[in-house]
Length: 304
Length: 147
Image (cartoon, rainbow over all chains, first blue to last red; front, side, top):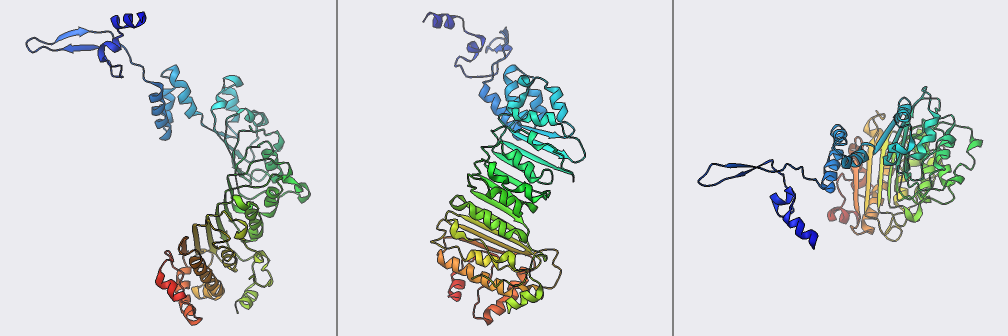
């Protein structure tokens, strides 16, 4: 009670001006006018009103929506309360190439002080011919809140010579891989650490490996596989499909989107049907061309 | 009914069996045709039905000639005439079976528009006037004709 009285007697400059507790812009000089006299300048105390954190977050969210990262970087320097919100957007997506992986490690040498926990999407582009920092692929497991991983690149020789070293956090629910970068066994070794995997997107031409190596490839995988499956280019191939069908917990994809060549029709039929009751949406695009199709004479025999 | 397994037809000896996917709501087939049969599409569509896939609400078929196919439309008709007839039959069956409850769209891409227009004559010849339309096949007149 006493504290209320003292507060009423000594209102803050902000309360003195607005009287209703609503936020407003505080003026440095109060102009009091009289009908008969000239305006009298009354000096008041200068204050900067606190912008509620929710409002600041809204503004920063808006900047992030417009990908205005330059302004976001500037906002991060405004005050301590803005730093975290700005960094949440600035580090939402981390893009790494073979060239800049070491820069992250140099910039954030102390793991605890690095913004790894703010990263939600991890994009890794590997260009064949450039060496891959194995230290970095050990480090990626510390992106503990990352949900999506994109692995892309090009190059004939698989750059990930030791794929089992690539550790990803268990928080990953979505994995997008260009199969021109990794072999099927390497993909298995990546996926084996992802028990919460829901969405899987594979594109590119899978690098061929010895078939004997592929036996039972999928049996060690334990993902949820309850989201969207996307297979592009040569990834609807039999060996890829066999790996997915070998997953002991089964497939529960609700959406399947396949774009393939006709040679893969049987494989894709198998994987689509394996989803059973879970499947809600099927998109299937096929480009027909001659190789594995009937010759004209046999086809005409059928038509007639 | 599956096609005979003539030389090289192996990839199409089996098609989708949608009866195994009872919760299916949307089906989207897109074909960029160069050569070979399209029979797998009507075979797959033949497994759709109100009892097999009761939740089905959208079917979209898009048929287009691939830019790699540079032969005249007559060739395309010669190759695909039977498939298109079967396809039209299945489309009509689905439309009738679901009693308009399915939004069914068949889009004729380059090459297929001319082919299906030309095939309308052959449909009439073989007793069916069903036309693969670029818009929804919801016209009661067309359905009446088909009946």
